[in-house]
Image 1 (cartoon, helix red, strand yellow):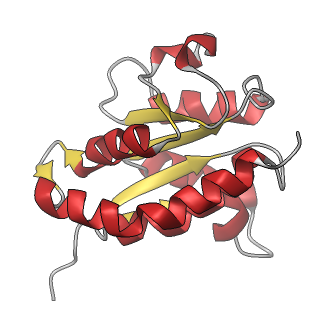
Image 2 (tube, rainbow, N blue to C red):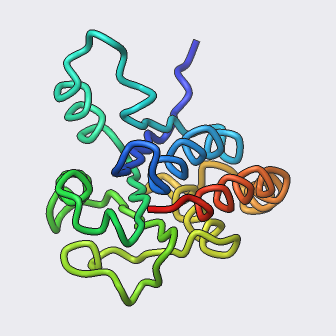
Length: 171
């Protein structure tokens, strides 16, 4: 049986039980519903007890085809966010996309080195643009645009609820 090609998506976050973490957890479960040909990874959910977390993390960072940085004002200067963004970027020759997903800040508040990536706001339009980018690979689209749009619309309310919950958390 032929193996189905899936894009590995690395979801970066900072701060246990923070806005960033809640949105990352929501995205991890949601992305695969919208584009089934993805395999999201999030460290808090996908590293098993007893595993050497740094080895798993390095392997996932290296093998991911797309990165999402779940950013809030509070975690903008997090050393882990900056480290993961740098590894995901892979230098100037890398074709991997890294998308800052802005939960409570506008794109003009991003500082170097994060501001080198084209960011989206965590709203319906921004999230759809991010999913369009994820859907577009060097081999072409994972799923046709009309299916992406329909699937996104079916599942949007679920993610919107998570985004609203995250915005209600004090940081």
